[in-house]
Image (cartoon, rainbow over all chains, first blue to last red):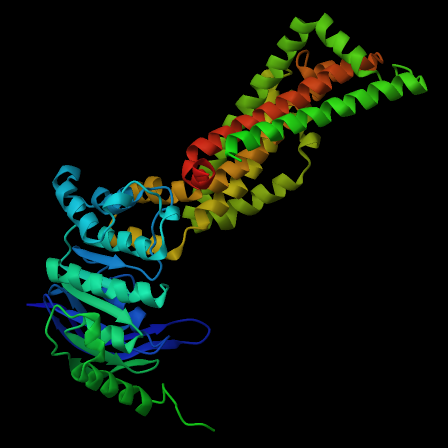
Length: 259
Length: 258
């Protein structure tokens, strides 16, 4: 079963000047896989994720989620945004339950055990009744992850979710998202511009070119799970990172020559 | 210092400076022998108020009710128009320019028309109060409804909420701080509107007292009504602030905890 099937996806933005965001992406993502989409800033990787989420229409090509051609956001997905998109007037648990209130077939009572479990899994149990303004950036993003998971979606989409966090919190969140994912095992699309982050988290890293986005390489990451942060110093990890960095250098994204 | 103590301090300081101004006023009237027809002393004004307390209060009540009706009408209709403005582009391009141009006409100038249409009773006063207050609500509510972060809009789409859900659970609460900011301005404007209405045609209310007493040079009476008006304005504004603090409790969390 494929969770996402993209064939010749192309995305243009019409305006005074037509901007080509995605030139051509063809990609099959099997169910249950963790895929990192890696590319330089502004390359169109978030645009691709928004297309998969049904928030943007593709200009050409076909894009299927759970074997169905997309017409608007598909059922059964959860999304985590760059900034948490929490509602300030709701407590943490009320924010998470918003997803339940909006879904048609869920009852509050049935999801109560899952809510407790997610809060515990993300270390938010004590903060369930706090308001977002009382939380740190990392905790806010944890709450947003819980909200994305509360309806047990078959696919989780994450758009640079840790981009706004400091380096230490980001490491911590990487460990946590892996632990959560090992527990829920839904398909996961994770957009990032950090090479180590993409390698650390993913089964497969999809490397995109600068805009307009094309797939440059699809790299399977063969490292045992659960991975510890220390794995980033291991030789195999270094090999993956170097390989990807070489790709970026060849595309002119990274330039180390002094001139 | 806790928030409540800070507030008590602010109220105390406000009262103290008010009393100081009254004392200075009283002293200069006596010192410079200013005649009461020009400017009455605070003691005269107080005496006037106490002597006819019941009459003043019943007139103040009339003005208060007019103001509240005008304000509530402005609130409901203003939010409704703002929702239409934000939700329907054609409404914004056709009706909004009309609303703006209508708002540019001084309402005081339109007031006599309402007397013709609605008579000299409370109806025309409420209508004028509404008219003066509603624009602030429309502008601030529309601003609030528009300023919803893009990712929150996306979230609503991803979660597949119904239009009803998205409006009442996302858009409206998101806009609430702006709506209440508009309400704070509108409540003062509604009071202005009520007085304008009473100026134009009325046999009741503080506006009527001011106009009729001014005609017969009964200055203590004019000032008594003005003081009541000032007090009422402050009361109404404070009431909206209390409502705001209740509805937006999540915004004042820091103040409670310190």
